[in-house]
Length: 247
Image (cartoon, rainbow, N blue to C red):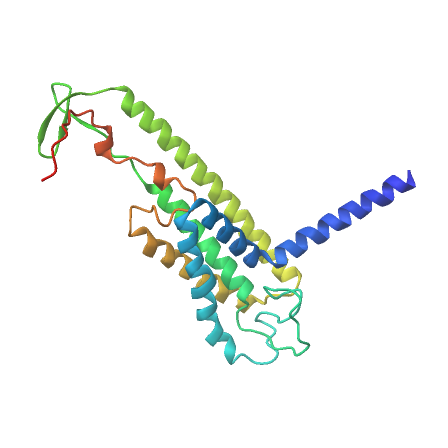
């Protein structure tokens, strides 16, 4: 019995150490995972996200932290357990105004919130039916009968998409709360570092998302992969077509 109890406590202790260590290296873990997956499956949304995540955020925070005081209680701590890359503590303490950990995680959260909201707000293009029950387009009547089941299918798809985005929003909210509590509890970030990091990183993430979303109807920015499966209204038209020789 004592042997079982000892091993149980060892497993719990190892699991706690594993989770805390993984949380400390969360920015690099996210970046590395997305880099590998993005290259292996050709996910351009992940690769474009990483450009802002790994380059823009550090470039913005570096000049802000360059002239920070040596000890800054309200900022980010320059300690081995608080750095983005653990094991780099040189022994010379120099706190930061905003920790790179908080800035990069806030960028990811801001980007995902923008992604979630944008996908949730998308509305499908419903087919237009005239008085005779035929589909119409802005240029005139189309010789195609309206299928009543189309609207039901579109409504079911919209409900599923919005349910998925609501669940993603809830999970992201929990991650935000846990991240702030753990960083405060471990004394790795002060109040100013959390507020500035959230404002700068989160704002940069939102701006980066909508900058990428301008191309291809969110297809280069959507990390959920939902935008690639959304159809435009013209794809629902059952129209006759003909193949013509190219001249």
